[in-house]
Image (cartoon, rainbow, N blue to C red; front, top):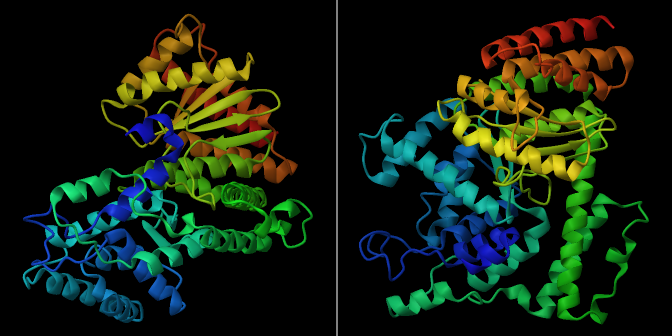
Length: 477
């Protein structure tokens, strides 16, 4: 708890340390997850061991079905070889065979032949699997690549941490420790230095550094930049110096990977149409996670390619994939353009309490950003599948009158309206070969010209009329 308070940026490290200690059985599991019930595993390490075994067979990842069916059901470390074979069989099967095998497997696991795909126990494995994936991913030792439109994802060992994973598995395996009493286990749980990580020794730490140098070299084979990271003599460095070097290399890997991703996004103007469709489709899908929606909006803004900088605030892995949504106290996305600054706030919430969960936080984030941006032209785009009446009312007061003494510039758009914005700007880019951010500024300014408007219902109609007129004018220019 003290670590979370003092160093909130270390939450991934804290979760990693906690998952290393979560084992079944343990002295606290007197009735559930017992040895008599077949439990004999550290679930996080068991997952890593399974992925490592598959990697040795040149299988780079598990997809959502494979992970959810087999990883939550892996309750004994001695079953890893068997589960590997089951996954291979499952993967090589036809879609029809997979449907049969998945049901047959769940029935076998629970020992109940009456289970169907609509049964709670069948669905539970997917819920457990999805939750486990999110916890495991947050450690940054697993890489998850999502395809939210298909409701699918792939998971594998984070490439830049493959050496640490090998060291973990060779040092700890995936079987639980023995504790003679509850108090001994509780002491173990509360000791931040337990278990001692293998790369805390300098020789193992050098192995990690060498693997990161190799990873970094693949990202910049012909570059003269950051050569100091690649050419440093590890034998001349102390343990603390190597740890700092490793952190610098991870930062550089993250920077270069995200730089490459942004470069490819800017070359994909034709994909803006796909992004536009994806926004409306995602907003209607169940099970979409907030960070997936935030990432899509970020990708759209980058692909438009007329910013000074754009920064999403969701935490990412070393390859730029979000591992959670933007934390409280921060805008989802922050942008700077030549003529204005802007935050983008997105939500999948469409219910009666949308205004409670989003109203005040959005206005507060914008005010804090206004103070940092030091510009008269500071905006907020608020995007949701649907905008609730009460949310319009909240923002209307800030736009028409004030929030803490001064007006704010907040434009709420539903997913369909924002799709029109993207499609319109795409048509402009195709015609003029370049995005002009002033077009977006004009839309926002015109939508917020409310001196002659009375009431948020009228403002809502004004936003739609302004959007329609703006889109027609831009397409004809």
